[in-house]
Image 1 (cartoon, rainbow, N blue to C red):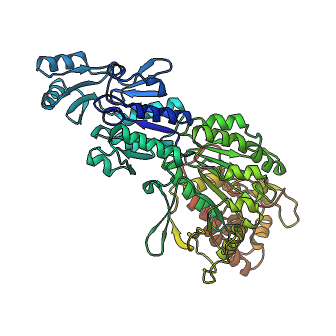
Image 2 (cartoon, rainbow, N blue to C red; image 1 turned 90 degrees about the vertical axis):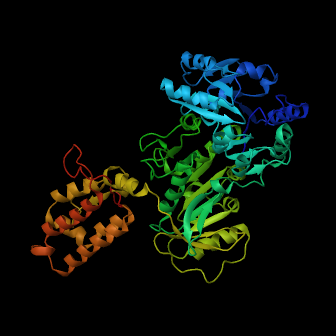
Length: 597
């Protein structure tokens, strides 16, 4: 279920001439029985609302006074969300003849033709207030308060996300409210400016339009409505057209060989998911996201596995995403950890509508052949699903069948597409696909259409994340570089680029030159630090040194000179303000090698 809450205005939306019809009340009751939540957002104050409507019990929260008051019908408690204007403001309006005049907990309201009087009084008193004009009504509120801010408070109280809401309104003061909802709807008699901004316009006016809308929600959860303006840009096709992904219903695999750009492509998509306000849960088996991404909280590390309760506690707040690091879980137990946790994660999503995206890195390890049938069904019910893998052929075939799109990067993208086509029962892919994709390119294929070649819109934060991770982070023993020397008399571990430069300065010339001649430094930088450009530059130094002779040489091929040049290349790419601790502490990323101790 995508939409867990219906947000309704009152006057002109639910009601006609201030009254809600019996058929509309019956529709509201049906919606509540379906497990969805009702929120009312109105310009009326609570006294005025209760005098005309006696079914407030159907609503879990009511936002009154255009966003200034939050009311809980079950507890009959009101919370004032803003400071009211000084009493002198309303007194002056009365003396100026503004009639009618309503003074609520916060809002002060009158009607035209007194709008000019209101503006003059605000100016004369030097107040920071805003005026909302709505079908002849003139409402005064503190600056920054509107129906959208009130809705945000209501959703926060209920643990719901605006991305799981349908909002319906009719008038000028509904603009901010409807913009905040995932699917904005206007009733048939709404003002034209509101209709233009909505994804749905009902055939019928007022409360009958709301009844019509509820029937559609109960019928298919508005499956035929695709809010294209919410789609997430991933790249630009050869013709200049943007390649976009739907934030709901996309079940995608990103696949390709090592160092082909999978992580960058995934990071670009996650960055857009996060910026759009969608919550994600990222399963990170190897600690590749220990710096977080998109402001997500990272749970777990190499010393301690996260608990299910910790993860679910973070996900209670829909604005907060989570990275679940499984470094502290034994390697063979990681798939079991995920499969055991998936039902609880799915239960939270079924109840609240979030997390909106589930991301599984190293999917060939986490979702291998034999992955449970019931778990596959749960994967198919998530809002958005992203799998990242270097070995798509090792991913459970039923899992592949649950996907509806694949992105191939790097060498031989046809191999990735063929694996996917075989799993979903499609004929072989086109023979004219490119043999290799350049860095930053990808091939997107949805089985219903043809593959699309595009250039990735790079993530804004990926470079900084990379710098932090490899310069000063800790990637673990398997990814560290080990200075051993020609006789393996040493075992000096460099867990990041900072440590690498520090240790390199201290090892003897024979040890330094041994690894230099074998190309160990460039290989490590490419495979473990994942910086192919830096690796290529270091490889040139290695090749030059190999041509210039053995130990004791001077000039550009000497141990001292090659040390200086390698260190300079690293510092030029990873330099940051100096940190305490000495050595190469001014580097801001970390680097490690693939050899084991």
